[in-house]
Length: 408
Ligand code: ADP
Ligand code: ASP
Ligand code: MG
Image (tube, rainbow, N blue to C red; front, side, top):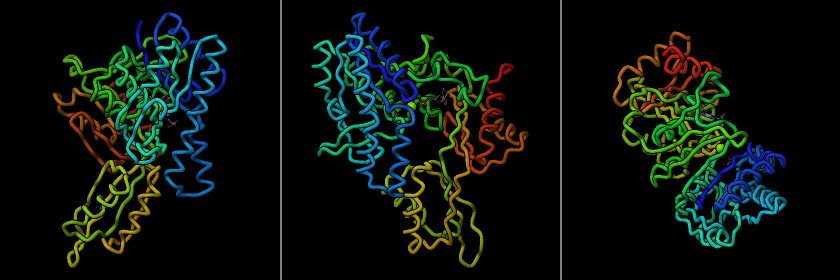
């Protein structure tokens, strides 16, 4: 008998037919004697719809109420899945994140898990139930409902697998596993049999939304090996695990595209010590994550000034603009320009640690394809570039062909 945590994402539960399909898959494991904890997302499109509803009422809604609203999406699915299992004569109970013992900090919309005390989960498993837990949500120690960031049901599953010391953690989605690039954009992308935590983390953080990046961070920290696989067939998926020596032989594991970033440029920031600190500490205080930062060389001699550009998630742009607007009197920059028409393309691979020339090849390929680079950032195992939004997919395909195409 094994203890298995299985997570089903929005597309896997997008209608009642798919929910019944999930119930029979879960049921098979339960009937062979395994203990099953099932984490589910909101039905496909529901979270986006709830966000839209809120924006029609108030463009900057209260974060507490937003989390209260978004948590309802997952709550619908857990009850429906429990009913579907009951129809198959299988005992099942649903639990909200709070009932499953998931305690978070108080940062609404991107709360971090502080601890998990899954007492009720254990009790209900011991009574023979399939335990269905609402993904993406938790509760603060003073009883406020929080959510864990978009795609956060992945984190619920990984964190529960760790807290329950599960034998197996499976992330079911609508593709066969993790590919060398989004298979919807790069048609000849290949499914990977395995990928290291670090590579998966960089891919996820740079836009491969097949896994939420914070969930991979958690998996790495607590060494939770997991499998990404399809809820629509029985094909073997991708194992995400610790790095092995042989992984470094491959220079580039994958290419990722992120269309959800926006660029903010502060024009004419006085070129004096402490200015950047003021800007970024104000943004940090508002819990806005900054990804790339570029500062141009000074221009003008009498009062030297610089242009400072940075990127944020599109969902944080309105909040970032508000913070920046409030800073203008203090920092005295000339104007702030927001550009939502950007795309970030990244190549990722642990092999970059031991192979040189990757950056040069990235720039060459983009140049040959007439794609202009607006920003660049690198880490030990990643190179990211920001390009014009409309060129994002073309750049992704060009880099995939260059580094991962058949002939390479
Ligand atoms: P779920 O609803 O199951 O959480 P998501 O929509 O969040 O699923 O993630 C699955 C999607 O991620 C796929 O449909 C695919 O288009 C996209 N994706 C992006 N990059 C990759 C990649 N490298 N490998 C696999 N899928 C990817
Ligand atoms: N429903 C949430 C979202 O759409 C969480 C998830 O699907 O994992 O982001
Ligand atoms: Mg997802």
